[in-house]
Length: 256
Ligand SMILES: Nc1ncnc2c1ncn2[C@@H]1O[C@H](COP(=O)(O)OP(=O)(O)OP(=O)(O)O)[C@@H](O)[C@H]1O
Ligand SMILES: [Mg+2]
Image (cartoon, rainbow, N blue to C red; front, side, top):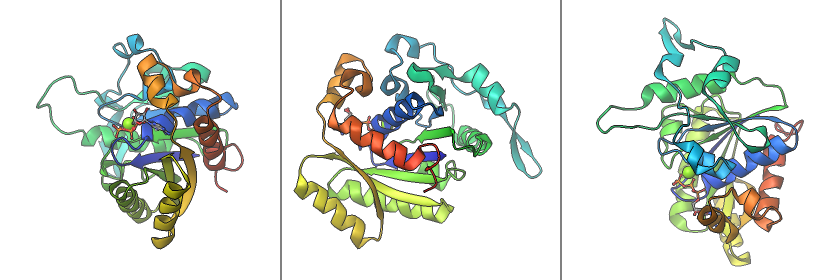
C-alpha cells in the first residue's frame, strides 16, 4: 500500500505519517517512510533523535536519469534503501527527499521526479507500505509526485481554511487518478467540531477516512524531543491513528 499524506500547513501531516509508519512497522509490515517536505522533520516524529538528523542522508540527484520514455531510477529500490535510508525505531526505513543547504540553488523538480519513481518501484505486496509525508502545498499533486500512490489522506483541522485546503487537494488527487482519497479530521476537541467536519465532507461528497482527537501529548512530545508514540503510547490520539493506519494500509485490507 502506498499512501500519500497531504493537507494545510500545521494540520498534522507529519505527526500522523510518522505515527502511522511506526504502528504499521510494529505490526510486522515493511514500512518505507518518505519525507517529501523540503523542510524535513519526519525523522523526529519517527523517534530518530535530533542529534542523528544532522548526519542524515538525503537522496542524491543522480538516482534518476532521463530516458526517451521519461525517466528511470539508476539503482534498484533495495540499493537506494541500503545506501540512502535511515533505519528508525520499529524498523521503519526513512528516505529524505531534500534538504537545501544553500540559498538560490534552484527548484526541486528533479527530486520530486525521483520520489515519484521511488514510489512507483515499491512493490504492491500487502506487507510493503510506503508513506509519503508531503509539504504544505499542492506541489506533490500538481507535479505528479504522488501519482503512484494508491490513496491520499488529506489531514484537516476543523476550521474552514484547513477544510477548504483538504477539499482542493482531494480534487487534485482525484484528478491525478488516485484510487482512494479521503479527509482525516485531526485535533478534534469536541462533538461540535467533528460535526462541522462531517458536514463539510458530506457537502462535498468526500469520504471521512478517520478522526483523531486533539491531544496535548503531541506538542508535549515535541518539547521532550520524542516521538508521540514514545511519549504517550496509550493516548487516545495514538489509538485513533492506529485505527486509521490499519484501515488504510494494514496488511490485507489496504485496498479495502
Ligand atoms: N492530534 C493532535 N493534537 C494536538 N496537537 C497536534 C495533533 N496533531 C498534530 N499536532 C501538533 O500540531 C503541530 C503541527 O503538526 P505537524 O508538524 O505534524 O503538522 P504538519 O502538517 O506536518 O506541518 P507542516 O505543514 O509544517 O509540515 C505540532 O506542534 C504537532 O505536535
Ligand atoms: Mg510536516
